[in-house]
Length: 247
Ligand SMILES: C[S@@+](CC[C@H](N)C(=O)[O-])C[C@H]1O[C@@H](n2cnc3c(N)ncnc32)[C@H](O)[C@@H]1O
Image (cartoon, rainbow, N blue to C red; front, side, top):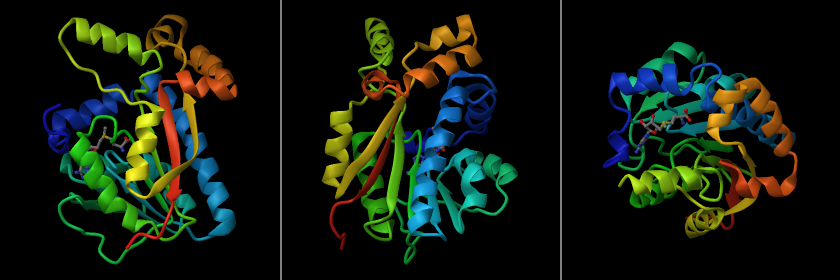
């Protein structure tokens, strides 16, 4: 990917994202079933402190996160710079405000702050400068020390992704991966700390096709209950909070 900012601008890509990547029963759809539980649990905990949570979904894409959470929060805003993706979000989101903009270039959310910020399937494939720019723009949008910033990395190096990466490398291609250590370093640079993290997806993707997605999902769900399994899981979710007051 040469320029991640422009990666989802075409209608063809947006359609593929919804109809192929998130096709019912796909591996990514199974990951999403697990992610929903984590997003809901984190929101539930936060609502004990802040009943009327305001949320921002950065890189909202086709709106899957907003559509899932918008009824459970007081205010929901989604931002993405690809109109093709947002057009699909508009079709499934009911009350969330959708903004087509690149917050790393102009602060269209000036004066707004949020209790719950999500950024899914963005940081793994964004270039290092774009990762930094996104954190720089988003961390000041966290309302206070109770606010949470939740994102995923769907490519833990120390998971079955390692074998795909080696396979790609043998063919002269590149596959992005990140480690927990790299994530911790990244968030720390931006005044955040990881307060919790969890993982899902020990079984290789191909097992889902061979043995059936539902069956493999059940096995991976059991494995996800074993604490150390997260270290070798493909999809990681990080829950972060501010370590100090941002200016
Ligand atoms: C893989 S999609 C993820 C969509 C959604 N978060 C999800 O998990 O389904 C990545 C999204 O990031 C968006 N994106 C990339 N660079 C961006 C930027 N600078 N500002 C806002 N959105 C951006 C793309 O347009 C795309 O919709």
